[in-house]
Every structure is written in structure tokens, then in C-alpha cells.
Amino acid sequence: MLDLELFDGPYYLAGYSVECAIKSCIAKKTKRWEFPEKKRVDSSYSHDLKDLLRVAGLSDEQFKRAKEETYFLKNWEIVQSWSEQSRYRRSTKDSTRQIIEAIRDRQHGVISWLKLHW
Image (cartoon, rainbow, N blue to C red; front, side, top):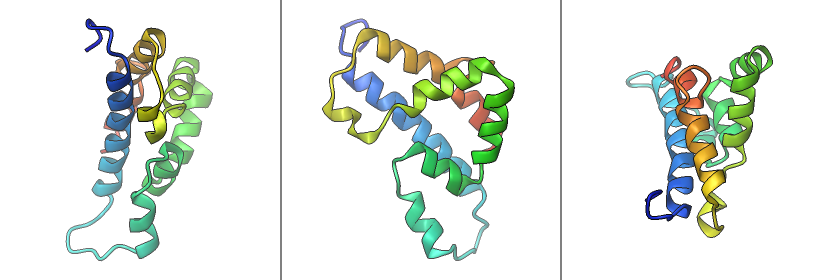
């Protein structure tokens, strides 16, 4: 899609990959046969990445890592600008490439950090 200069879809889907990764972290903390608290379940249905981090119990970890690693902080700031409303906005080549790189950076990327917790 990027080669065809169709930037809206990749930008939107890149953000959803982070949402799904955070939700994997939430799922990992749910024990088999557990009947989770209704508030936690309802909060898990959010698309807001900050809210989902809180539900996953990763807000403090994210803050700590961002404080220690400038590149991680920069990547997280790029990713957290995403919202599910992105599907209604036009994305540029630069913003799409930035979010994809912020997510997949092997050392300081958002997904590599989330993988530590799922």
C-alpha cells in the first residue's frame, strides 16, 4: 500500500497493531477460569492507547522506560498520537512512515517493548 501511495490504511492499521498488542498484555493477565471485574472488561473495550496501558498495568513501566530512553519516548509519542478516528483523516507519507518505524524499531520500538509483557 505504501508503494502505491495509499497511506491512510497503513497508518490506521499500524495503530491498531499497537492496540491489539496491548490487549494481548491484558489477556495474559487474565487467568483461565477467572471471571474478570466488569470495570476491567469494559475498560478493555477502549481504543485509547493510554487507557489500555493502564488496564494492562503497564503505565508505570511505560513511563519508566520513556524516562530512561529518549528514543523510546519519541517513538511512544508518535504512536500515542494515533486514535481510532484516524480512519477518517488523511495520512501523509511521512506520518505513516514515522508511525510504522516507531512501532517496529527493534531496540526502542513500541511493539518490541510490549512483547516483553505479553
